[in-house]
Structure formats: C-alpha cells, structure tokens
Image (cartoon, rainbow, N blue to C red):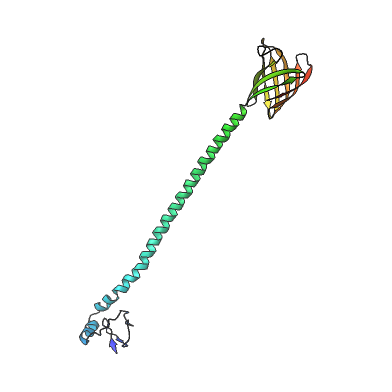
Length: 201
C-alpha cells in the first residue's frame, strides 16, 4: 500500500490517481515526512487540484468563443439579406426604366406607308405619339409638292385621320385600323363618298 503524496490518502500500489483528491501520482512514493506535511497542510491538496480547476475553465471559454462567432455570423447574414433587398430594388427600378423607355419608343413610332385609295396610289408619313397621330400624304400623280396634312386619333390599333389642304380646309378623312405596319380602311371625301384603301410599310 502507498499513500497520496498530496493529501495522504491510502491507495493501492498500482493506483495512478488519488481516489480522494484526484491528483495524478508520480512514480516515486513520497516519504512519511512528505505524507505528514500533506496531512498537516491542506493547501497542498488545493495545489494538487489546481490543474483540474484550470481544465474546468476551458469549456466556459470555448462556449464564450462560440457565442461570439454565432453573433458575428448572424450579423453577416442580416447584412447579406439587407444588401440583397437593396440590390433587388435597384434592379426592379432599372427594369421599370427600361420598360418606360420601350413604351415611349412604341408610342412615338413613325410610319412610311405606300398604297392606294381605290385605284389612286399615295405616299403617307405618320408619327404616332400616345393617342395623337400626325403626318401628311400626297397622290403619286400630283407629286410631293401637293402635300395634304393629317391629324387624328389612334386608339388600340383604330386610327382616324382628318386631312386638310394648304388653306386649312378639311377635305376628307381616313378611317381604319393600323396593325403591324398595315393601314386598312375607308377614305371619305368632302362630299361623303367612300373609297377603300390599303397602305403598307
């Protein structure tokens, strides 16, 4: 039988740790005076258990580190979400601007049309901006020097144009549909007579 060199507790000869204080035993057995000192001085027991106290502090430190890391990770995730939302908002605004520009282009589209009113060939130029249509046309037989002004209303492919001569007098009007660069309908002269027309880009 041997004794613990720290607290003096009796131990088996092959014991590696004290069953009372938990201290690790050295290979050499202390003499009786060292054992007596251990029994009379309890601070030795406290000294022996100090390494175990330090070990018990490590889990607390590791827990604190993990907590800090989790908090940092949460901050990074929140910042990422906020950045994604802001980026998405900017992208949507850019898309809206692109759509507005496209719509503006469509509303201001210009047409150069050629065809005939009944059997009379004509050339026509149109500009459509929103619901307002403006332009001019001339009969091929008279040439571009005899332009007739056009003003009218465009509404969901339906187009009505009123012509005026050089004196500002209304001399007739076109009424039909403009789809995919083709303008088809009827022309009414000042007397109310109608003639079919078809014009294409």
